[in-house]
Image (tube, rainbow, N blue to C red):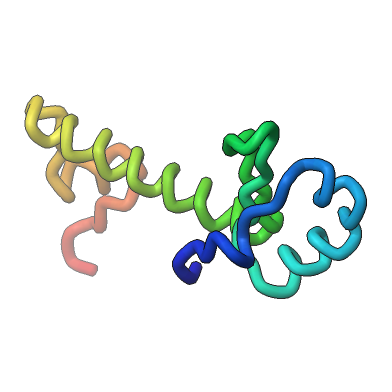
Length: 95
C-alpha cells in the first residue's frame, strides 16, 4: 500500500455519494484506501476487499505469534517427540 496522498485519497462524504461507482472502481483497481470525511473530519476509511483481507490476515498471524510467544514464556511447550506420540506418529523400532 502506498502512502496516503491527501489530494487524491481524501474525499468528502457528499462527493463520495455522488461518485460512489468511481470510488469503488478505484479501490478495486489500486487497492489504495480512501478516507471519507464528514464536516471536514475523517469519518471512515474505505478499503478494497482484497486489502481488507490482507490486513486482517496479517493481524490474525501476528496475534498467533504473540500467543505462541506467551505460551513459550509460560512454559506451555511440547517436545517434538511428545507431539509425535500425541499424533500417533511414533515409528516402531526396526523400521
